[in-house]
Length: 343
Image: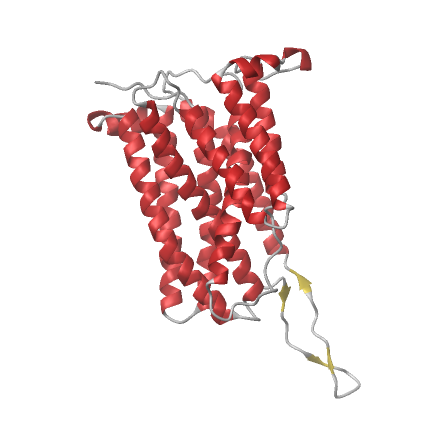
């Protein structure tokens, strides 16, 4: 969608030359951005209490703050991993413009991730409680605990990623991104958990594929917007190429998500816990949102197959918007109490 809304030319009252068309700002896009930002903040702020309502479960202190910080962290990770991935797809498109690409966000995303990781590390430094003053923090204690070490590892990884993004080889930022993924997977599955390393392995695959899927889609849609007039054919080819890869990523996300769910909720209790526990309710909301993303994706691919690349951009943008909600709900999921594994 263009930021300039075209209008018909109006003849000049005193001559043959038409008056230039009036250019109106695309206020609709600005409103949409504000709505998406508000939704991204509302989900982690209100989601935990909505999920916990009526379950009898107790929320951890500072659950909303942790959910909000993890939303920022996951969003930064998606941008950081998805942009180089999408750029690699762009290079495989025949006739793709070499200079007419969207402005890179990968140089800024790591700093947002750094601030979020720093906030989460401060929570760990205060015994998993939200600190109110600097004196509450036990910085030295971070080095003596597993959670503290992982938190510091994420903070440092985002700093290294920011430096790599400014180097001559910005794709090297994928290495510290992988460190963040592994640290998140280990944090989510402490050693006391049954088959913790299997759970961590599933989370590594799940989080990696999800970051590539969401972040790659964001960059592809931004690229399509840049190419909508200069190279619409290349844009259609890029969307088709991404669609084939995204199908594989979606299959991996679904498979690992199902396996992780069954590790925490046995088959005989899944249906019950999906509606009676906060974790189950949030997981159900995530599944429904992913289903909506899939509907948008199918609509975009169908229009693309019918030879209408311009019309395929609208559902692709909707896909990105809902994907942002999926990221926020995933962050809420990490802050909620783990369901009891009934036998």
